Amino acid sequence: GENVEQHPSTLSVQEGDSAVIKCTYSDSASNYFPWYKQELGKGPQLIIDIRSNVGEKKDQRIAVTLNKTAKHFSLHITETQPEDSAVYFCAASFRGGQFYFGTGTSLTVIP
Amino acid sequence: KAGVTQTPRYLIKTRGQQVTLSCSPISGHRSVSWYQQTPGQGLQFLFEYFSETQRNKGNFPGRFSGRQFSNSRSEMNVSTLELGDSALYLCASSFSAGGPGETQYFGPGTRLLVL
Image 1 (tube, rainbow over the protein chains, first blue to last red):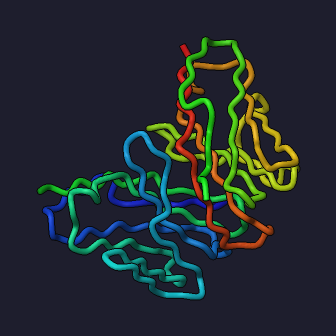
Image 2: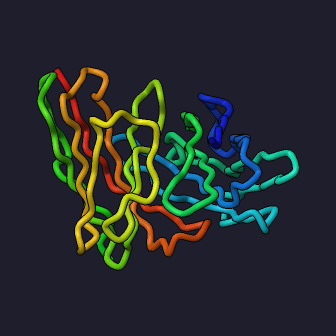
Image 3: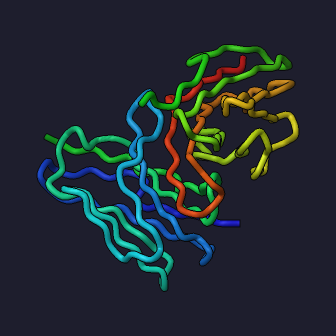
């Protein structure tokens, strides 16, 4: 089955700096890669996603890049703010309803 | 549009008991997936239901089961609870005609503590 690895497990950045989280996947059939943000006591919330026919996608301060050849994708957050502090999960899917998640990155933005 | 709702939000059980968790998907969504989240194992896929049928299943023992009703609401059941079943159980819904790239939306989860 699919295996998703996520790095780093923890990340601290100064407010205003950029944060980058990287994930690799093993199954070349995976074609959908969402990123979720989970705050304490809440379920994961989708923040951005990318499909395999696209190399990059941007939404304001958040961007995701995908390298299908190398089987890795990354989340980029620019101009970080304290409210960006949360746990971020990457995921991969090749069919609806079944997602494989990375182990999460705890991001702390220091004011 | 209301989001995914899960009940109850918190639950305390003892070993050997059984538990039933409920999930109501976003209106119009027909697929419901269940995940177990623990600090050590992260988010692990349990199973997915679509049109009252289990479509996908993860690697969990038979003590974990589920079902889906005609209104797309879903329940999962864990029998003979073990201490290791303590976790946050998350439900996610999607419209899901079965093709790839279907976005999933998560509920707030049910936190289960087994004593």
